Length: 87
Image (cartoon, rainbow, N blue to C red):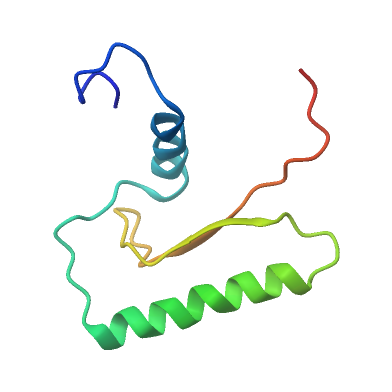
């Protein structure tokens, strides 16, 4: 992504986008959702976030999006467990 943008070095957003591509696929930039579809997807993803928040040992929600992806997902809720890391 850095090279495509004409940069010599990768930045944090390059890594974040790479993770999203692996997890959910590329953004479908030409996908058009109606306002009603966007609303339904937003409620759906909010439900995922609420369930995650109410679970006792759930990883924290890092990102919620309603941008369609090439994997077929119309949106997703990303949880990342940041505990127990060693350097």
